[in-house]
Length: 437
Image (tube, rainbow, N blue to C red):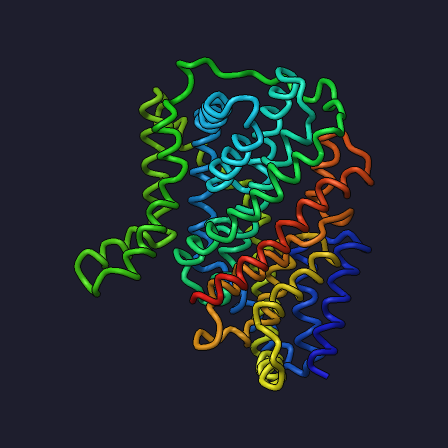
C-alpha cells in the first residue's frame, strides 16, 4: 500500500498542475500533505517533515542559485555573452556554424538558467539566419541542445544541483562526470540532428526582435568574457581533480574550499563585479541594483525546488523510503535505470523537468547506496530522465515552438526528438561511465 499512496499522490500532482493549472510549488506542498496523511502520519508530523524537507533541500542551494543568478546577470548585461557568441561564430565560419552554436550554448548555458540563456541567444540566432540565409532549425537546434544539456546535467543549474543535494552527491564530481556524458549527447542532438533538419526552411517570426549588436567598445574582451563565464566551473573541476589526486591537508584543503559550489560562485560573482562591472565603467550602485534585480527571477524556482524537497521529506519520514529499499533488494534492476525511468515517466506526465527530477529523486533516494552505485551518476541518470520526450505539457516546448515559428507536429519532430536524444544518450553515457567507476 505505501507505493499505492505515492502513486495516488503523483496522480493528484498531475491533476493539480495539468488539469487545474495550479502553480507547481503549491501543488507539491498539497501533495506532500496528502501523501503524509494517506501514509498514516500524524498531521503535525507531516507538517514537520514538509518543513524539514524544504529546509534541508534549500539550505545550500539558496546560495548556489542566488550567486548563479547574479553571475549570469553580470555576464548578460555587460555584453560578455554576445562577445563570446560572435567571436566563436567568426572563428568557426559559416560551414561549421552549428559547432559554433553548440559551443556558444554550452559556455553561455553554464552560468545562465535555461530560460534566460534561451531568450538571450535566440535573437542572435535570428540575426545569423538573416545574414546567412541558413535554415533556422539548422542554426537553432545546436544551441538549444547545448542549453538543454547544461540545464539537465550540470551544476550549478537548479535541477542537477537540487538532486545532488538530495542524493548527497559531490557537486564537483557531478560536474566532471556531467561534462563527460554531455559531450556525445550534445554532438548527436545538436549538429548531427540539426543537420538532418537543414532542408526544412521556415522563416523566423517577423518583427519579434529588434536586435542591436553592441559596439566593440561596449563589450569586454573575449578572453575576459570567457574566463569569467567558466570561472566557477574551473574552480569546481580543479577541486574535484585535487580531491582525487592530492593527499589530505595542505593544498587539497585550499582546493576543497575554493571548489565548494557556494564559494566558487561567490568568488565568480566578485570576479565578475570587477571584470564585467567596475572595469567597464559601471558604478557600484548600478552593479548592486543589477544583482538585486537578478534575484527576483529565481524566487519561484527556489520555491518549486523547496516543494520537491517537501515531498521527498514526507516520503522518507513516512517509511516509504524503507519500503522501496526493501523491495529493491529483491530485484536486479539497476538503480540508474530505475532513476532514469521514473524521472522520464514523471517528465512525460508532468512536463516540468525540474519537478520530474526532484520527485523522482525523492522516490529513488533509498536506492542511493554509495557502496553500490555512484550518487553522482544517479544525479545524471535522474537528470537525463527528466529531459525525456518533452511535449505539449512542457513550457519549454511552447517557447521553442513560438520563437521558431513552428507548427505543433514540426515542433515535436524537431524539439521533442532533440530532447529525447539528449535523454537517451545521457542514460547510455551514464551506464558506460558506471563500468569505469
